[in-house]
Length: 214
Image (spheres, helix red, strand yellow):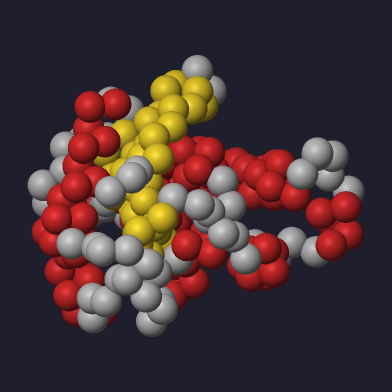
């Protein structure tokens, strides 16, 4: 079984990942959800195993970037989800709606599944074998085959916007556009969480004063 390994420097932080594409994925949705839960419960901190529709992945580096933003969200306590893997997928999709993320970039009735392990520690990449041992795939590959039409649709990228970005390849242009969307998503979530926290603190102070006054 051949896997791809890569390492990226994201804002001076090292992110390691490994991935494989399963071409005979046959788990039912219930079994798949059990697999995700069981794998998640055995992972160390700062490590995530991701399951993604293969045609959505156009660059491993964009996964590393989404993972980085997820880690930052947890570090700053502005995370949307309780789990690092789901937080990564939310940033990859640019949505706060978990159900939308699952339907658009994770679950598919097709027999293909992209499985990736991301971590800040290279030695933790071996955790990708947790789901692989359960699935026991017989047919795998490592070549990315992105469906650019679907990717453009998912990220609401118009041809006009695509043409306005400098880049030697379509992949490079997409990376720039999706990375920019991620940065905006992170900034928006940080602002919303901070505002909500400040508002709750203010309400608490007002309640305390009212109670004290009475």
